[in-house]
Amino acid sequence: MPFRMWTRWRRSRLAARPLPPAAQEWSARHLRRWSELPPALQQKLQAIAWILYQERRFEASRDWALTDEMKWAVAVNAALMLLGVRDYYFDGVKTILLQKQSFVLPQTSRWMVSHETSAGAAWQYGPIVLSWADCQIDSPLRRGGRNVIIHEFAHHLDGLDGEMGGSIQLPTRESIERWDEVLADEFARLQVALDNGQRTFLDPYAATHPAEFFAVASEYFFERPAGLQEHHPEVFELLVQFYNFNPATLTVLAER
Image (cartoon, rainbow, N blue to C red; front, top):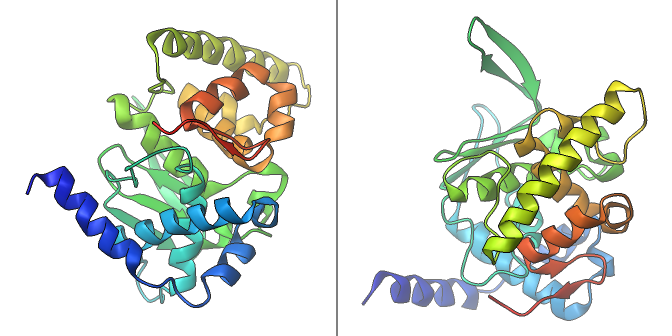
């Protein structure tokens, strides 16, 4: 049996298994816009999350117990990003490591190594690491439109074209070129606004690197779509094309 056919067969078997009894409760607890989703989208979202929950390898940092609810919370938020996608379940993410709280990562520059506290991290060919404390829906980080789960999985999607640089795979060459133009313009405008002390809709972290702009914009796209559409309409429309989903109208575009 060809590998792709075998994968689909295996996933059909996984999908047929009953969801965890508390899945509905966990979805409502950990997904900010759960109550806004129509029943059909709730069902589809949980079906995607169920595959992620079973396929991806979840681990916890040493001396800390990983629970089924934690795994579901990550899976159901990541599943939001796949509502308009067919037959992709973050296949390149082999391991999801949960830390109890924010953690320290070394940052290497040309001349020195510094250490910064982080709520999440993603590597192009490696695991995704998340601070469980910052995954909580009432955590300070998630107020105002942030979502560390979406942020780190967005970095993974960014890397599918070969590098995590902010360029993304859109349906047509024209839309790819348009995204690169819009990204460069919006990134520069955000930096200027912050340099001038202006308040911005997007979190200032989006101005640190084009890859971070895409990841932060993805957070706001799913968490605060109306605001992103108002303040960054071109970014919003291109992300609708990328995710094949409009979170403002809760509409899945034609499947691709």
